Image 1 (cartoon, rainbow, N blue to C red):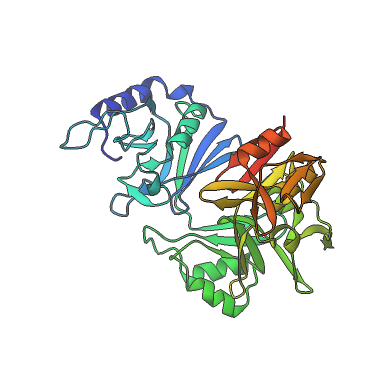
Image 2 (cartoon, rainbow, N blue to C red):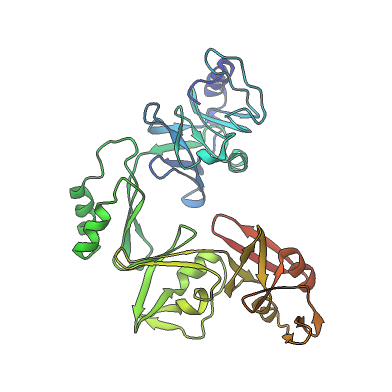
Length: 378
């Protein structure tokens, strides 16, 4: 919030004189306003990217080089002309305050739906759990760099692509000429019809300019290295493994230009994912939940039934070395001759998270952002 407590301003000044020198020079924060992102670095290594809300067009988040000048847990909000708002669910500052300029800070919020939007009076909002995590990592003096970069060139060592975010403050930076020049400069060759289509969507939504297909999972970019060959789709193996943090073994792999690929149908075209292929823009969009078991990506996904997450039994059991069978008479699934409590959907047997963990002695870790459930043997 742009207007904060006078006491916060006083504390900021005191820390500016007394505590700034304590700040670490090995970590830093970079906030990109149009990308609605906060990146936390240790040295030159990106540790984590957090989604944020930024200032409205009438109360823009300041751009420039700053540093952490104060930190407060459970701050009180002092809105101008109104009564102070104590810590709690009604406080728009959330659970933590990390000040970087008098009157401006990185803080939590009481409305998670604002993340990813222009919603503040100039401050940078995070989810409360994210700001609490970040709060423990930064110290007084930690550099905070706020940039306004709509055109981001990415080069994963395979081929470059250009990501263009909407010009949310209307600075006039996303001209057709500027984008085409950037593409030409980096030899990103896009067929004219596709290029015109993508340029027509600039400033309406984030656009990826890529030579060929790219694949997203739950709106997260997985890889821009997708090969269509003999009417089959192949996905860069290294990139999918990086995304899911697990090995990915294909029965029908391909090696193209010395790079390994997995067969798309083998992992995703199994009825457990929502797949949309936009041939004009060359985008493969997938939604669902991936499953890994002890560091191996399964060729299956989860289902949701009445808000309950259901896990397919056979691929999990077989990844653990169990034998799965089915008795038609009793309509019962067995694992190593042990009867299972299952739900039958489209001729497949599923179990709840809790039941599958207790049956196979597993525990799980969820990544809700990426859409992955990782199972591990106890």
